[in-house]
Length: 145
Image (tube, rainbow, N blue to C red; front, side, top):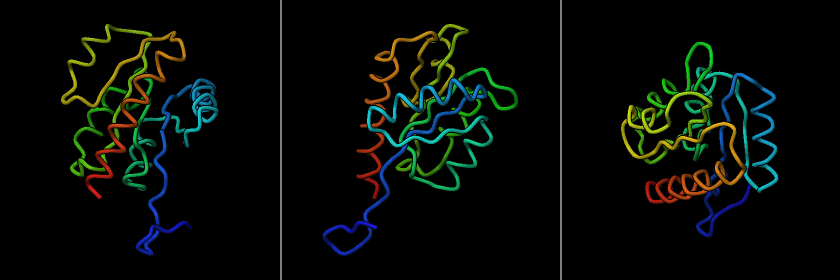
């Protein structure tokens, strides 16, 4: 375990959480992000994502989630994340969809921590909002520490 100059353990690096009921899609996105240097975890349901976030508060800077999933969909997941009380450790959300109108979806969610990416997407169409969200979350988490 690394330590800071004060002799206290350094915080774990921030990770990206990928949520998609189609595991192959989630793994493809995860592999791309890993090759770009990100730490990535994958789950296949909204409920599993919330459990993972609650188990490791402050671990994830960004949640990238498909919108259409059985059980808890991506919009419900985004709403639950945005309702978390610990704002400093709350991840930002990127909704990925091949359906609906992104602006309408984004406007249905409170706050400014949700981006929408339409499928099919070019890599930069995902990575640009992800990098911006990751930077905002990292700065907010550092300020709240």
